[in-house]
Length: 519
Image (cartoon, rainbow, N blue to C red; front, side, top):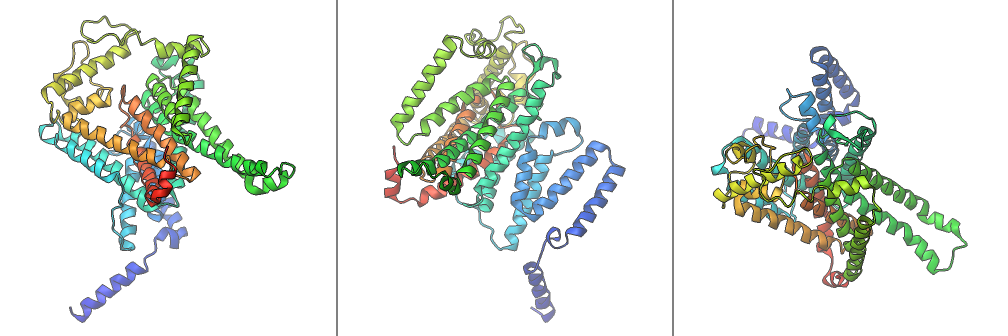
């Protein structure tokens, strides 16, 4: 290499080593640039597009400064996708997806800068990659490659977000990721409570005479409730953790018979621990209230199953968890039997049972009372027909909607985009091979999450308990819906990343330590 060539290479290396982001080194210049861009946008573009563009600029700046900050903003705005699609249909991507792209670009730049391009290792890599590969086998038979690629990209994003969390958050910053997810859910809950009580909304959302079903930024109550139902168990798990942490100094002082020295107890951090307990408890109450206000049966059933799993996993001994679950079931049956629950909620939970006896939606008289149930049954039957003719590889991942007209039942010509049952949906789209890979994936997730619930650290253990509830809600709610919509998959990727971080601690445990915590 010539002298000029070596000099250029050295100059580039020096620039890389000394490279500082403008947002850090020159904050005033950044503020001026954003102000100028804001003025241009407001002057030249319609207000919705200008506002959205401004948000994108701010997101870009945050993501360039710190990838985790970009991920936080991504998770916060991800659920705004339906709202963005409605008000700014001209945008090819929603705010959440734009923020994700910028965040991933920033992550890559940071990795190059620090010369550390390594894909994180986790026990969930193999099952996720196997499922994506199995789903890819359905591509040759897909009617619409565009629909198929959208779905493949969605699962690839779950994997990449999980890697981003593992790499950037690590063992010390995982609470930040969980905080981002909880903040997004809290915002949706506040919006939903306001919608429920404002006395205004679409006519078909009207319930109880003068209230309206909560739907947040999802524009539909069911996916909205599904999102809250996924995050609520995490909040409950952390509430249990805060409760355990709050009791620790109390128990120690009680064992030492020092109840007369409350000053020392307060110095031990009791007031701060109580604040944590009240904070997580209030958040759980807010999410639960919004979930009820959504009036979504699927979400209610999913949360009921999640609550039972949390109760079972909470004690260290399996028999104690089993006793608590049985007790909870007995109390629930008694509450229904003797009318201890509000009549409106009881009716909502039970009024569809008479229609579930229908095995074939063809020829059944359609009424306002049975429409929702029959619509789901009709789409289940369409999925079964797809699977019958494409048993091994399906009609192509993401292709339920494009091929639906060829399998639609009489009177049910409008495709809903999915089969309203994720298991039938994957059977129809990816065949028995794809469905088996999907079930194996979540079987692995459940198994590793259960192992994490045996950790000794209180907060990590209770987070794992909450995640057990999250996966349970997802699995049960998926019997009647599809929650891989409206960018919810990004939050699932973040939570899978948090689980992977917990698994690092589980792997570090010695054999004797692990055996001592087995049930």
